[in-house]
Image: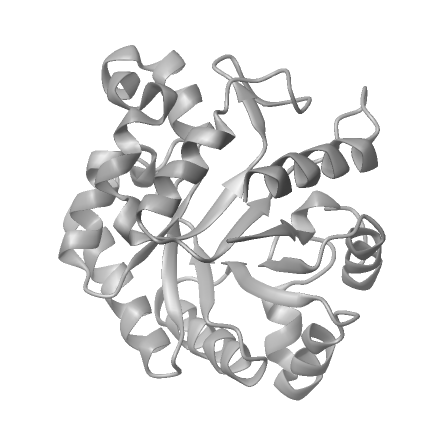
Length: 259
């Protein structure tokens, strides 16, 4: 295992400025967010000139790229065409893991399965692995649904976010009960290829490091049991009342003591 940081930690900065700040905070690996809603790296920009996009993404000041988090703005067949382009870029930049969002709650399960199967098939053609992110308000919020998705989509992995079940348990005690404290992680751990981390309370998705309820030590132990060797990705956005550099440094140091 190793500690990485998402460029989403600095959502309002240009990509290179975000990378430089993370390097200054002694991170050695990064996950680059390629989100259409972002200000620093949009899929439409890197796809409009793939060679230029590859050069942009390669300029990481020698930081390892642990993966890409991808949110496309396109729909229909164009979505899959764009995703194929992202996978070509991932292959060219020697990135294996791509995290993708889950569909919102209420999406027919079979529709989500077919969508993810297409993404996995496209990615495998370029030697890339697709991981669906556990997300609040989405099908992937529920670990049981995540498990069924992985069992129905060969080759699909998971980007685990322990904050999601903590908040879900508070908002829906019946659905979230088994996940409280990480108890329900065991069933999906074998599919986990990435982890997103911040500190969280049941009533607040992100709080200052040390003021939440995420049991990092227990999570690391569970991952070690599955021989997990990939990234623990710090994924925190700035909070007005706290020094963001201090928060990121605190969580990096905490995680490094555990691995």
